[in-house]
Image (cartoon, rainbow, N blue to C red; front, side):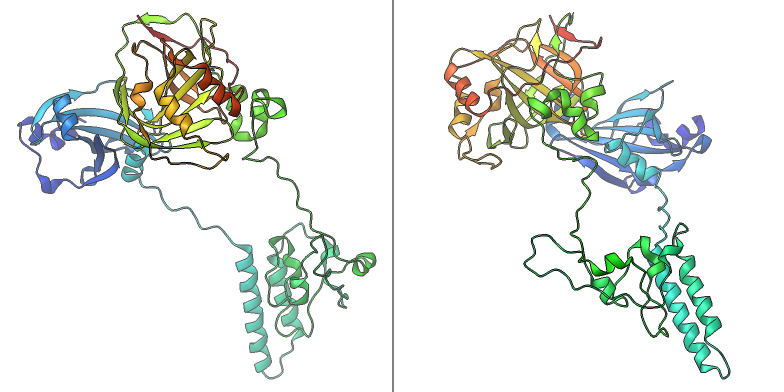
Length: 489
């Protein structure tokens, strides 16, 4: 790898800018604060069958002024076979591509490439995947067998002295070879066609079984499971029809009753009864974390480790909004451009919603309501800011929302009014931090929770307004399971 560094870093070691023509920077992600790019021209083979490539983050002018550098480049080693990568080196550069400092990363364990992340976009550029083999289509095989049989028959008829019988047997064998191996003798074609019963009248309440395939076997494609019943070659004087019991031949076609699906991926869930929280994990396979997850939310926040936590940096903008009663809560979709910075990551505010009573508790204490502000970063990771609400004075921001409540469930309303979501935050910004999950199905884990210690006041009238929609929409507290909880001093 030392030879590789000497090859890749000659300009950096001399304090010069890299030649622009040597790079092929391609954007893989961007937002208002930064652009993430990869240099496709830098991809090259490394030791052990791995590959290396340069990537960089280019900051906006405002972020560059705050950070003291314009871009940071990273040399990554990619293990294409095991879908992992290792950061080898970082270089911080000024606006004119002048190296400011370098960081060699030693003895760092490889990180897995997670689906849907920026890392995966880099990985797919450096380690392109071969195209998947084309699946064999049995219908195409059967059609080709029929075509070959027809051509063979035509050729035999044109030759003097030839007989059709051997060709018939050979051609039928081609079709049978394409049929499923488990086909039974009962499916063999009879010597005489079976009379067909006309379909149900148009006014029948129950749909009748389709008869198109039986009426015109040469014009339709049979299902894969019925290749023994394929149309005969072109020389056959009549269609081949499977033998059916006499009683069925005289009966009217039965109504088609589809089998119920094993599960409903959009199964309704609620906060009570047979679709309540204790049954969420049984409603759909993707909800399994609701029952077996070990980092579930909400929790009763106790025994936090008191430390000097960094302040959460809020960059919230005034915005118009869209408000909807989604069947589980009142949700407000906020405009783009409002963000927070915490623990070295930037998250954009997507939406916020309400629960009554508060889902999380602090030392066993519950609050009248809570508002959850949901944020997402460029890798799709979530951070939720929790603002506890207690009975007190009227809250102006919430009053604006309540003034514009939709009249119908599921209908999103966009009022002319705007709000500043920062006005909903408490004056004191001390907070608890822990890793948890979504508090609604599918209960996805890996969510960063930031719970303010100081509650915000909301009037009794405003609480009652929400109660007209949802008297109780809070998931019960989950086991802490020994997870680390940090608390601001």
